[in-house]
Image 1 (cartoon, rainbow, N blue to C red):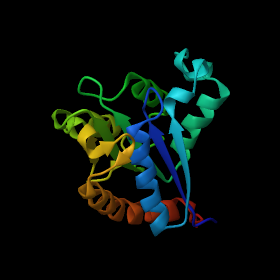
Image 2: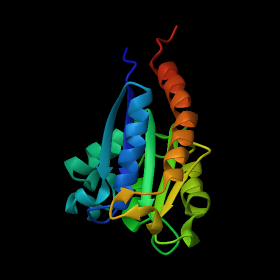
Image 3: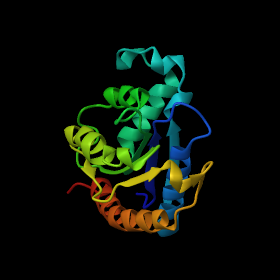
Length: 188
């Protein structure tokens, strides 16, 4: 039995470099400083035609199928996307559509988003949280949203962001560890 927390970050960006990926890397560093973890970042835009051309899960390419399985079997998922027209990216939704409807049930999910302005700050509450509630995931109470002014390129400048990340990680890591331990415990 392993005590290593398996953390998978799903990044819904459509190109690199990415502010959203920079945010995810910061979140992962915070998690890694608190617990033994094995982390993976899935940048959806890198999955290619074997992903974008698929209409059913059986049509997915090997890399896309492996990425979806990684999300489904993670102990903790970080779901992060840039905001386009008030919601997550189409690629992000396309990926989530392939996830088994019950694979994330009661699984801890941290929600994060980046956008051009604070006008999009409610994307976590109005788009991401309902999407993962449909999948019956346990979404962490604190979501992390950054606007373009919080960055210089892909470098995060706003010190309040670091505090918010610490608060979110403090909330989710104990839950993820407890649920992972319960799933790995031998059945009597």
